[in-house]
Amino acid sequence: MRILEATLICAALLAIALAGCGTTSRELYSKSQSGRTDVFAEIKQGTPIHEGFADLLITIHIKTPCAGYYIFEPKQSSHGKPGYPFLVNIDGQAALWKVEGTRDIKRAYDKDGKTSHDPEAGEGINYRLEKEVRLRAGTHKVFLGLPEDNYSIEVEITLQDGESAILEYEPIYNYKAHPTRIPSFLRGVRKYEVFFDKQEIAEKNL
Image (cartoon, rainbow, N blue to C red; front, side, top):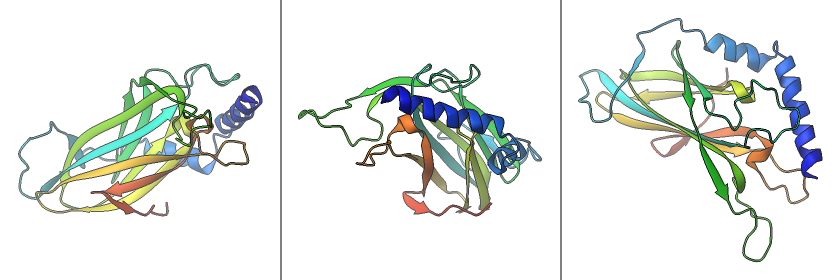
């Protein structure tokens, strides 16, 4: 079952790689091009905020299988390897941040031998990005792209003068090919839930 499942997933990944003219691929390419350089700047936590500006802590998380899990995985894939890329574009200024990742093992079965319902159960690589940026107070469009997974989402946030806010992205994974429909990181990310200062916000239509 694992081999069949991995083969099907890999075939899907290969199709995505070959479909470079797809809508999401085009959007990822477009958003990777910086049209501006004056929207935000990375800062160290605790730096005093100047009048008219606000700070935004961006946190993004994803877990992927270890390298080599997919039978026909492209050699250039970053899944399970150091340097998984996160593309962030705010109001036209783009940044491609890469995360080294850490090995993460969670119980695949509970104490009674039943399959765990934890979507991140099993062995994989955990990638967590944390970047704090400073930008002008006001309304901003924040785009997140995962080039490795052909996924993107854009939200709109409003920052108050002098505010320190948090923008969090939590992954929702695809379901296993199983009647119980348990989500698993081994099936790839389906979408992200986005929280602005702990309040969930809706995706903005691109």
